[in-house]
Image 1: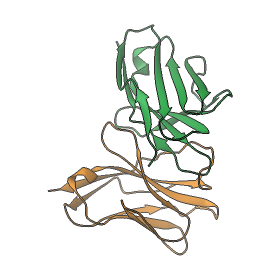
Image 2: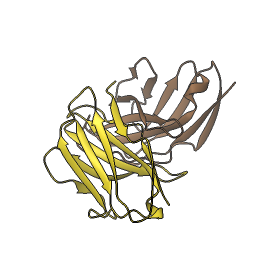
Image 3: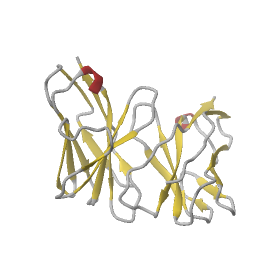
Image 4: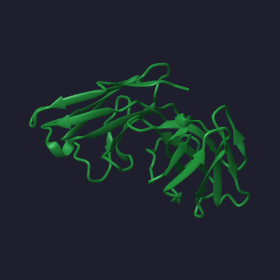
Length: 112
Length: 114
């Protein structure tokens, strides 16, 4: 699976949009971009995933650049409960039987 | 989303004893279950992958005789930490997946070995 690079931490004001970047310059054609988050002392929570088109669900939007070498997770109206470590993970196929490789992620802190 | 449970959520045991952790997929049948552990201030590390009815596949450096995994049904996998020692104290997290779908994680089990 391709490696990803994320900033170690970010702050965002409550109510504003939080934009979390991820670089995955070595991504290959059949690899998806997945986002999970982990709130302190809990298991990771699936957020969203995509291949090349932008995706949106009730939690977030995922914007993938045309060359697929980077992506941005957008939380449109951040709340205090969105404070967590956010992981960007690249993996082959949309659900192959492989474990996930977690990097260090981005610690997002929502400020009141 | 799909729900995965773990039991117990916390356990304290004495050095040399064994501890069993259960992972259940509550509203779907999981073709594959995964076990991870997470040490303080570190990221999750995959320990092993298990498919129902077959032997688990362990990651390099994970002792299969120490961390026994049983995947008896499509909704239940267990991890037994045998002869636990203080260095096994960690946060153990399972995930479950149906073929073609994303992984869903359990809430984790905090193991403390005294």
